[in-house]
Image 1 (cartoon, rainbow, N blue to C red):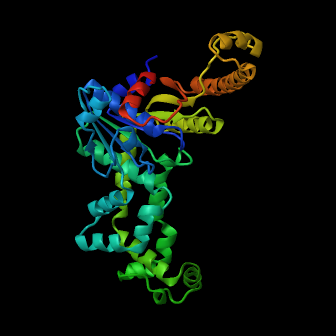
Image 2: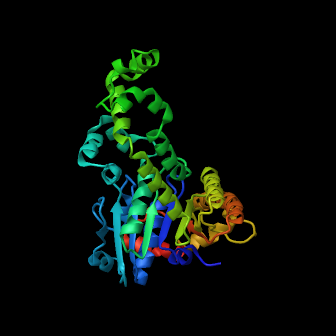
Image 3: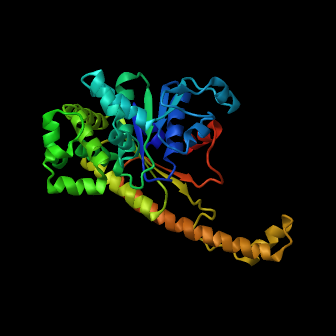
Length: 375
């Protein structure tokens, strides 16, 4: 079976998914770098708020537009790319604004929505907003740009499946039938803002206003009125994104740590992708405890280690005991992780790679290049 990097090399779009803290950003950057070194034009896109991608690429910062990694950064790392490497950090609010501008029937409607306080809150803080905009940005890049490879580093969600569920949740909110029924008098009247008086002073309206405040309810009514007629455009766009993710030129790379929770999430995500006929390019087990004593033989005792340590200049007798204990602990952890990952590798029929836990995070191009060799 080929490796993850070979599988990714046959794709135009790679989506790195996994639970938070498993190293998706680093793996995404390494796959994009691999294509650039081989002669392609590659882009890696992230919304990682920790800006780890910029650090890994040796850039001081990233923005909502693509930036090319300068040649001297490669030279400093001793690399000679045959192609180009670009990177960007998604601005969720700006991407929302661009989407509204695209679907607004006229400038007045666009400005009305952009200035609405409910919209401003939703576009920056609503749960699932990051995931929805990440998929929207991916579609824009895939259809408007000519990159040989686009790698999307998905948001650091607590649960990886949120990435696929977020668009439906956002669209459910925008097209919420209950809210539309409740606010129908104001929306149907075509008036700016919700006027509670038009709801006849009803019990439901009064109760809502008591909990949310009249201003918030008015903003919600105005927000839904502003989106009237645009919902279908948003829904069609989300459908197009979903269809894109099912194309053979796309490949999902599952990234996991050896922790049981992360492995369970990777298995759940794999099952979901399989059920929706979405292509899987590979599986990366990251930050795995290395096996320092291969084979099935017994581990060395302190007495076994003492002569060799003495020859190396270690005269402290306690050092051999501590080293033997540390080795035993490491091997116990490595064995447990190996068994847990074995279950994952058995269930996921895709190229996989095991990346050992490193002493420090990868923070430059040279480190990414070394990581490529592990993929």
